[in-house]
Image (cartoon, rainbow, N blue to C red):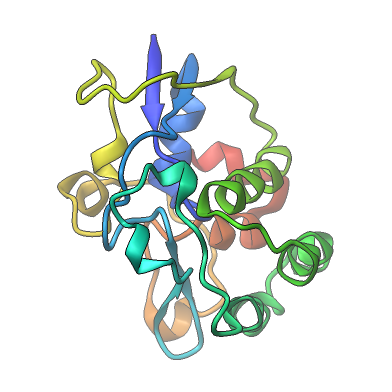
Length: 199
């Protein structure tokens, strides 16, 4: 069975659990951008609270197919995101193992579109998780599929709010308690090659 997913920005644990359980994954480049979704944001845990890392987009293009949606570089959001990741995870068990991957991603990679950015983010994460699924690209927009998660990749969707997974040790757990379903970044920096066992 084909599972249809959107391209997301360092998707949460629920997203990668779906990916891990899929037989074949189809990514849809023809869907339109959904505001306040994980297509251009991820949530990490900082010293103070949860922190949303948001990729700014060209607002005039919101009704374009997501494959064509351009990133705005009017602000240095890459520096902000990398700084947030460093301050949040430099004390984590696997930070030193993976830091170079993310430094390169934020300092050297400057794609034109959100689609390219998210594709690269996904390519960084897959080898860390040790999971690889057959991936295909949709050839046209279809409103509904049998196994369709495109509209589930939003923070306020019931699927994300009700999703459960095993707890793991988090950097700021003593301060904030365990925070469920964070960005996959939180899991890989804390669990490294063991991350896939939580999916």
